[in-house]
Length: 270
Length: 201
Image (cartoon, rainbow over all chains, first blue to last red; front, side, top):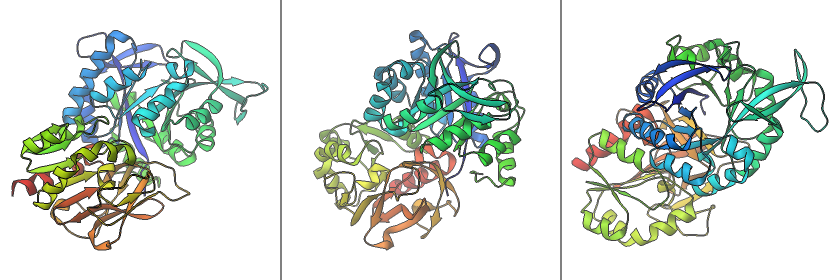
């Protein structure tokens, strides 16, 4: 039986030599967490199932630095590696794959040019294309939106781009469905309302998207403890959960999270 | 040295790094002459791309590959590199190498396709390749099609994803795995180490 995946996310500031892992709070304040490949090796020892490296600077000049980070990581870490942030074209994706990445995640560039999803899927396979969605709750009924009931009232979810700085008017659930049709292999779904809060995942968002598509959904944003991961993997159809700060700052190990999941009846790789 | 066949379809760094990590001496070969010159002790067909593309790009290597297999050189096929060893696939009209008898068919309805993630092995035979691997150990799979060998005896291990399918097949010097050992952390490295040791013997 396929196991649910636990994915530490390494937000990389590539503006310093060799890069460093940082963590933002609700897409803003920044804390320093460590050197990317050292953290990656530590998460491998702890039993992580996959790693995501996000270039939060997302600029062209930094692409080679990210390639170096992945090259260095893939010398000693043997699990699926995803690179995101600043992937704008097939050439960016190829640079990532040549450095040892298995998947790329796209967000802003795909919202601006949806054919990028088709192109990545065609050249490198569906499994290599992760669509990242940053979604924010919008309360109040609007025509043409996928409305979702939540304890705080009815809302729809709006996609954001440029790292949460701008909004698109695009409905996140509809965008996820379109991305699947275009050939995305995974949806990495981040709740902007929860990201960095440690209040737990947005269950309604995760449930709505994972019930609407037939590709794996990676729940992201808001993880504060192992019980939050148990909740989202038990109560929604998400295939994986992503967390950053609970791992980076040594609050919990991946092993502790998996032990909590196992006891809660979620199938994980121990 | 271990020749990794580069058929022009993507990331070979992981398998190269993984074989080097476990004491192998991998060399990426990009054309059939290089494979001829390489004097390979073993050959790896890595797993990237679709069946039709893989066969089209692998065909120039086929004569040399058959010679190596006939002479007893260990071969390891990974993922699509396993599937091309069979006779045919539902994914493409292109014929496979036919080194193993059987078909490659699409995963059943009712499961998410591709299978992507970590799944468990059920061991059927304790082969050298699977030394140190136990029932229930997890490996990383990414695939939409699976192999159905005509002779069930070649199946060394299975995995369950909507159907109980061949995950490891072995026949004489031919070894093949549906999962990606180079992406399966310690247990994956163990399998590659077992393969490297087979080569040294």
